[in-house]
Image (cartoon, rainbow, N blue to C red; front, top):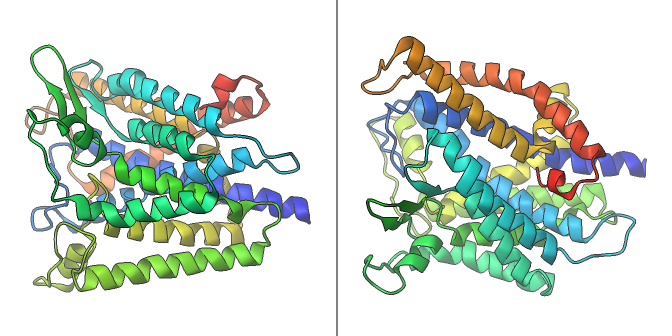
Length: 381
């Protein structure tokens, strides 16, 4: 019975990680084949369709949940079941540096098939967050949790701070809080697209939450805590967002229709992720962890496969999309101005479903190989 509980706990994490990877695939298909429909951050709700809005909204779940689970997994690494505790500092530091290296090499090349501009995006943000977690992982867990809460709840209060590119502090603040170009000239351009400060807060909260999945934790108690966390996050969101008190740069307003009003309420800033954005996504993430532990649908075990080899799936799907786009341009040519793209949002979901089915088999093969391999490098994927 205990073994079943152990498997269920770990499975629920992989299922959630796999689900957000599949949602991420939809968003990346959008970026590749729907780029002629330009979106802003926050979204301009009167200029995009509701289908595109909610497709983009679903993708908001991906980065916060993945970063949170990265922190949680780091705690599980440092507290293995049936083994003495071990330091996660070296693992986090090496893994973080490895992710930064991947971002500036393989992943950047996958977006354009060339190096025009070096974009520091989500993998960079996760890597930097892991390095920062490595620096504080030896502190008492409660201190790590407090730092996570202070960063997640407090970083919106820092929005008034800004630097001009010529001022001291511009580069550091651009990396931490304000996305922008670190270098922009004819030789090289580097843009920090994912300000890392809020993501550091999220990974710290994930690490703090690790004991929820300790061997000694009773499943019913864990599930109760997850539901409380979900309700607390979404209730806080309703209060802060409902009265436009704090936590979002763009106030919501009642619109000409109920649907537009809902879209306005759910229209959050991602770069950097606002408090409201994180309350919404992490609250839903806690609910999904609760649900995945209590249900046993076959499709969830399929999602688990993607979650068991996330970096492999991430890299391979980007290169598949790059090749597909290049082929489409060669065969059909540009049909949306200077780019090739599809006409309807439902086509993005259809392409994504086909790709997820095709990529399932190589991902499963790699996942099985990874589980059996003793290579530390392979484990990073």
